[in-house]
Length: 444
Image 1 (cartoon, rainbow, N blue to C red):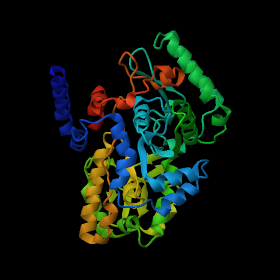
Image 2 (spheres, helix red, strand yellow; image 1 turned 120 degrees about the horizontal axis):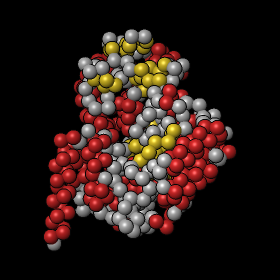
Image 3 (cartoon, one colour; image 1 turned 90 degrees about the vertical axis):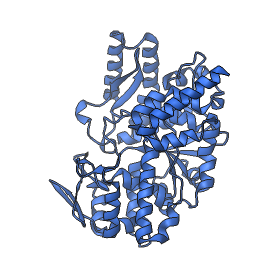
């Protein structure tokens, strides 16, 4: 009884720390304090679909058709039945603990979709958290970065990087060897990482890809086939989808997104509501970018000067007409920003995006802003906004070994016997508390 009280006190203390930095997530977690991981995973794949009042848009399904995916028909069937996607996975091989945790939690459900869709956010710089410039691997203390691209690539978008080559992998292998000789990684880790390079990074199938984003998606696909042999995945680069969907919506006179972008009153109100919000933009502080980012030499440049019918920075001017936006999107001069992408995916395409610690908060902010704009100007769009925006997958330690320590992705792939097969029965509170430091740090 005393142990149960101590655990409850620890849980309440964690929520008290989380509430000031992420009240949406704190409130969400408080509703699941008595659940198991499998209960929450079941909610992700079954409960969210029951809460939705919309269907997946034809523009999103058509964008999938254009990808010519091997499992495309199965993916579309899964999305029609259940329009949930994992959306906290950045484009990089899945060695990062958070990326691995997302997939473990999603697979804890009793009933998973025929094909599990994972949106890979490849409109991120190469020095993003998930470290797509190389890999983050367990070291003797914490994680260590191992680079496959030069430091000069840091700010280039993943979506604009050419593929790595065999000599690049040779350099990665040499860096891992140097870490072993410096006693940064153990002999066992060195053997593990060398085996993973041999199996995956030197794979002809991976090396024959022409773009890094496609190599990342393929690496994730191949690794997941090893980690989760009974589950099919589709890793989808957002750059292959969102642009085509926005182009389609700009041609549709009845589209919520077209109206939001083309109606100056609605657009200005929406911009004002999200000004200063986390992960959106701050005109006063010069942070983020309003609606779109300019792409220059593969790097994202902010557009923070808004003049009613245009966006600009010191070297670029973008008219906000359908024709000008279509031309800029097709010419790869701009990409949609985070607020526009999630408005598109969740409220236009009808998807339930299950993301990370901050995503659960800013999707709520975006939804609230859209609701205010719609109720003021076009209440007939209100039904499209009646979809859930509150679910998260990143930020738990679902899978532990017999000694109670998290299992790394490298350990799981090379020693699957280390993974406790009954991890789905673990209390959600326990998994969250073991990741408490990460959740608090990344929620701010």
